[in-house]
Amino acid sequence: MSADEVRVLIVEDDPVAADAHALYIGRVPGFTAVGAVHSLAGATRFLERTRVDLLLLDLGLPDGHGLRFARGLRAAGHPVDVIVVTSARDLAVVRESVSLGVVQYVLKPFAFPTLRERLLRYAEFRQAAGEAAGQDDVDRAMAVLRAPRPAELPKGLSAPTLDRVAALLRSAPEGLTAAGAAEAAGISRITARRYLEHLVDTGRADRTPRYGQVGRPELHYRWLAAAGSVSKV
Image: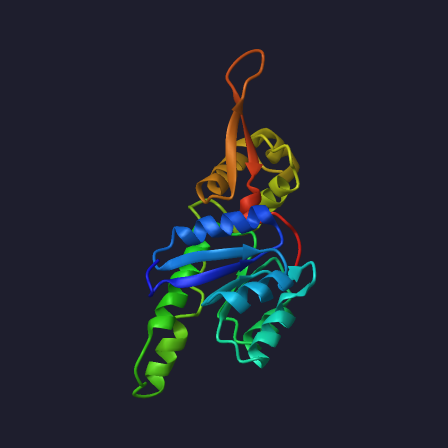
């Protein structure tokens, strides 16, 4: 491990999600996952014995709320930075995160490119050095942490319909066919398949052929738990 690498501790009570986060971090140059814990008590013990530069912090932990933990770290003068990874969409929680110095706020579910983008922006901000010549330099440094504009969807796909298809897939543990998704979403089978394939292409779902007694195999799509299917704060 290089001395310049950012050492990341994952604080996530879902072991499957924690493993996925560790794999994602390992794919981003300059970052290393040094551990994963499933509670705030575990995070406290880890930080007492190991140097950590960045927490990938869930909010709904079994022994407390992640932001209260972050507040305690700030009060104690701990220098670790925090990226919140959560399904909490309450803007009051977002504002509190900002007030505590959280450097990024990432909503579940997300695919690898989303986390990679946030980590690389954090790395750029972290490496900034020297003295600002004026307000413009300060603004440029702060702008590094701002989230980029959402990636444009492929032509013909809409965000509301994508959200609807994704929600249907998340709520179907056994998976869905394009025909099943089309019926549930009120769209055509061809349209449903385009959205399902987009979810596969972005790492949020997978597809497997299932063979019937006659004819070609039918594709079944299944939401990936590692994409953040657990609904919690």
